[in-house]
Length: 166
Image (cartoon, rainbow, N blue to C red; front, side):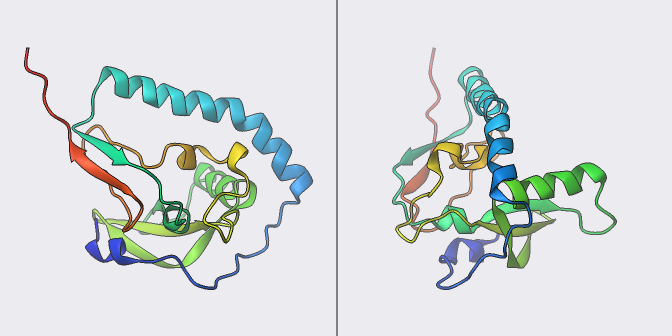
């Protein structure tokens, strides 16, 4: 991971762009997708019970909102986006409420676009906590094969899991 990214702080003043899809369409769609999202989150947790990741996350959230301002989305370096990619981006931006920030970076030789969430309150808490997206429910995420990335000052830390001796 780019070490300079760890040093970013939340933006001081940045108003998100207006969503094109009205709320009376967005919220029912989110409610309909909720059971699928919950199933996905818990199926991942089940896999991690069976296959323990090399690292574990310890600590508590400090509710600073940095994770809500630095959401990473992998992006193709060149070429056109597929229809599936366009629908995914539409879902993330117009239904879930994320918006693209004004900078991108290269991470692990892949272009990464940075997004923020428009539902973060000034107190550092989510204004729509009950219907928050799966990426928010699963943060910070452990990975089976690599060390997790955390943002500066979030309150969590990455610890190498001790091996059980039989």
